[in-house]
Every structure is written in C-alpha cells, then in structure tokens.
Length: 254
Image: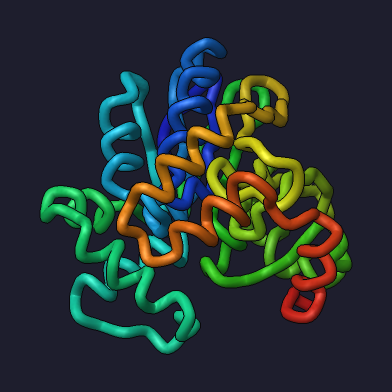
C-alpha cells in the first residue's frame, strides 16, 4: 500500500492487548501533535483485545494498521484454522482472543495489509512492516550481521524501514537503508513502560511511563488465560534486553 506525503507519524508496534499502556501512549501521541498513527501489528493477542481495538478506533487521529503474525494467527483461529506455527502454550490464548472479537472487528482486521509504504516529510520513502519486508516471522536484532540483512532490506528501495516483532528499540543501517524498531507498546523487553516512535523530519524514540500497578490489576481482572503471567512478566517486570538478545540469538537470521 502506498499513500501520499505525510508528516508527524507516530509508530506504535506490538501493543499485545495492553490497553492501559496504549491509553498512556495515545495521550502522549495527541500531545505530540501526531497527524497519523501507524500500528505495526500484533495488536490484539493479549489480555484486553476489545479495549485495545476500541481505543484505536476512537482515538481521534487517523490510524493505518498492518497485520502482525499474532493478528494473522488470531484471524485464522477465528476461521477455525489451527496454525502449526503457533506454539502449544499459546493456543488457548489465540482461541480466547479470537472468540472475543466482534464481526465488525474481524472485518477491520482482515483489511490490514502486510506492509505499508509512506512518503514521510523529511524522511522520504518509509516502509512499515511487522518483522521484515518479506514476512511477519523473521527474527533479527541489532546484533544480526549486516551481510545477512542486506538481501532483505536493500531491494525495498526505501530510505527507512520500520520493523517490530522483537519488542526492542534500536536503530541501525543495512547498506543504504536505515532500519529501526520502535520497541513494544504493551510487551517490552527491557525497562518497564511503553515504547513507540515519532517520525517527522527525524526519528525520535519515545518511552511513555504509566501506572504499572494499576495496569497489572486491570489485566488480572480479565478472563485472559495467561493474565497473571502477562501482568507479572510483561508489565511489572519484563525480561531484560540482554536476556532476550541471548534467547533470540538461537533463532535469529544468520
């Protein structure tokens, strides 16, 4: 998908149904004067999918969204398809989330493309994808060798590619392409809080603090099958970046 020139774009990735985090981020996005929100996928797999969708629909700022692997898998589950790429430990989660959706939300999610290309004022051609431009499952980090990534990113012709999926903010160059990850709004790997990014002539990484204790209470009050684990391990005490870089090293592109 290609759109015209835009300015002041807020990139929100990997919300994962964390409505309290999204509420706080949207307040900061409005204060920053964003003209467009690009949602980079993995919006609904998490404890508060309906609340998350409602916040995006009613935020008062135009929203353009792409699908992440989690969103895609939820839609498959809604259609009665159990994908082999979903680990056994997450299948009850995908079923619960899929059953939470209303038909109009399913219809909206189904319209989300895999990638989005925008001409962003002062930055030129920016390609938004979930994992990499070629699919929504590739794993790479700031440590992945550049020679591994060049065949994936250079053919895009974009000046900047915005990726998510690994939940850790970084900026690096791959050949002539700047590759950035805003980090995760709802399930960060690193210090607690919500991570996102503003694009407007430059790229500014943002970290929004919110009431973690209250958010954990709200998540625990849901019927989400892994509510306690999410509250403890994604809100109150997320894994460190160092731990996740070590874990991802075993499955990252090489």
